[in-house]
Amino acid sequence: MVDWVAVVLAKKEGTYGVDSAPTGAANGILTRNYSAKPVDMDRIERNLDTRVFGALASVPSNERRTSSYEVEIAGSGTAGQAPGWMELLEACGMAAPVLTAGQDAVQNFAAPGASATSLSQYDFLSDQRRKSVGMVGSFTMDFTAGAYGFIGFNWMGLIPPASPFDKTAPGAVDLTRWKEPVEVNIDNTEFLLDGYAPALRSWRADAGVATAMRNLVGKRYVRRGNHSFTSTAVIEAPDIATKNFIQSLRTGGLVSWSIEHGVAAGNIFHAASAKVQITDITESKEDDTLMWTLALRHTVEGGSADFTITAK
Image 1 (cartoon, one colour):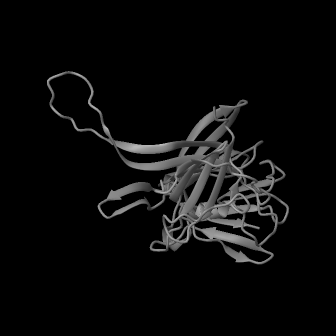
Image 2: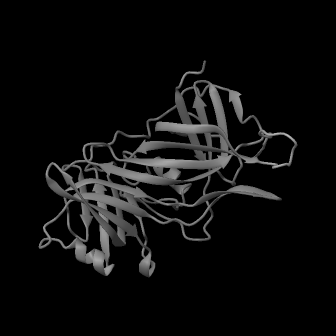
Image 3: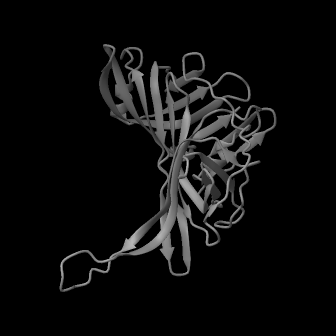
């Protein structure tokens, strides 16, 4: 029997697919809702004509590893130092954060053609270790009132040839770089859309990063391609005379968007987009209050950044 005690270590690779050997002392990830497949693969079906009914054996092909987990959104504890989750976001298509000592860490999506970041990841269930290299992924975000904000990661990577599965305990894991988050609420969180601060129930985002296994003669890797950042905001519907989001929907106009969470230096998360489109409004009822679910598309119109994170 193997106990379900999950530990994840992840470290940026210097060269794609070359094991960067993450350690518990420096590369532990404080996860929640961990899930993985020890091996994910395709099957080659031969589809032969035979003289009998029944299934034929398939052949395993194109094996890889997939995993997912969530991390809480909190700062590094020191303004000007990058939180641990920024390294994970690099493997999801974002650039390395730009640090200003004592002030902030700023992260945008990497430009096309920039060197792609990948991770080596060791997953442990009890004393069973599974290795992955060349890992890239996509991410989601969730800020819901009365809960902690978190980032959800979905990963795909290669299985290294040397000892990918063995019996090795993780040992001591240092998680002190993962700081305690604060609740999403009226005191800690501000949400703005087109300069207006609605009563917010939740904001959820999907980076929409395309990942695909490339299995070719002479080259095998996980490709991370384009992204399409979208989100939904559930708000109390404003009086139309106060803020007319219906008009923004009808015209396809571009509006500003931001969320800031946290109040203490070193534990403040700020995200912003200069040009967002409202693409749909759905109505619902909550406690006999009219609620709107706004679908938002974060655009790069005019060369603006579609999504910028500032940890400060």
